Length: 315
Image 1 (tube, one colour):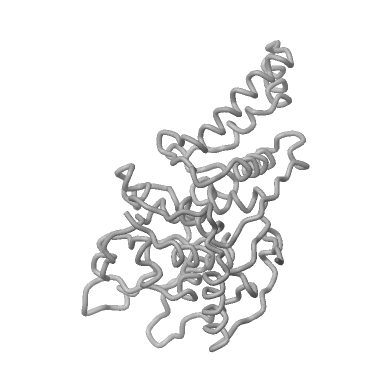
Image 2 (tube, rainbow, N blue to C red):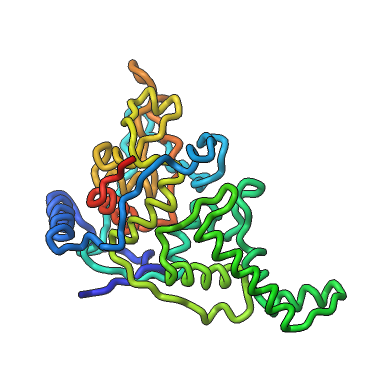
């Protein structure tokens, strides 16, 4: 089976799929995913309330899951919407992908901690200093600058303790950070290796851990680690007035509210949605509160849609 890579190659142009060809290929991809048995045995459904609901926080009062980009505004009356083209990799729904720590970070962590890992203090802590605390070289450098004496063995013990705390965050979460039971040990090791590069830990550049994932596994991570922050797994499908009042559609409704192309567009560049009660005005055609995730590829978003289709969410 062909394995495709993500990461730097994500920015390359994909072949254009148009008109009936789009419908045919997307339908064939979903059908082949089911008939070829690509329901990954390690993948499970997303369930339960959103993380924000768990914390009793509203979307407007939190920085979690936000990119601070709501996408393009709706077109003025008489204007056409900006042209957009769905460009998916051929056979995206059936081919495994090779991911590295940077890919796993954007699927699982970037929605809250940002591209630099700095987070949004005081609600979301930076990952940089905790990761730098796992480096013996950095600990020795810091103690030297402050005039303190520390042996290498002492620094190694402190670094070991700091690494245990990092791993505990993945397995048990923190005061306001969810745990990541959906990640296996290899995936966690790959993310930690990337965090060391992001934090400029000496010698980290050569430590890259590759992981082969199925498309549904990619979708599972994106949905559980990013989408589930704001969207509960199941619940009532809100109408335009409820959206205007602050309701967030459940994950179980997303594949019925939107087609695959609409979903991919909404996630990656944004799209206007109708909010408010009739009679609607121009202002009621609003881009919505949902952040736009420009750092996700169309394939990433399509994998999330595939996952939600093959593994319907439930309470």
